[in-house]
Amino acid sequence: MNTGKLVWTGRKLVYIHGEKDRPEANPAVIELSDVKSNQSIKITAIIDGRGFDRITYCKWEMQDADGQNCFLERKTIFNVTIDVKYKRD
Image 1 (tube, rainbow, N blue to C red):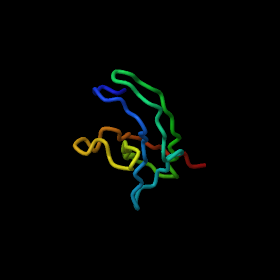
Image 2: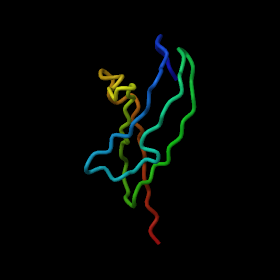
Image 3: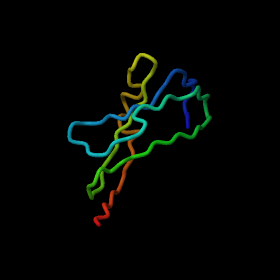
Image 4: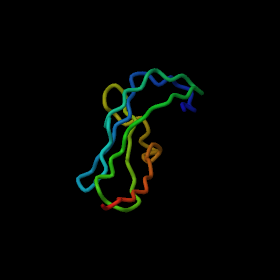
């Protein structure tokens, strides 16, 4: 949800995958349609835990059309916490 006063135009959510991060996101880049102030949209991504057990964080960043982080002062605003339970056969 866009709770600000600016229209989000040309923005995308990008999965910031570190070297040691096991989870994968598909898609890793989610292009956003224009989102007006006080408007919400639904997006989806599949997170693959890749065979490990633990709580971890998937770091996402909203970027503008130039690839710049739109929320430098709130770097964790789009992070997702996942609790992975790997079922061994």
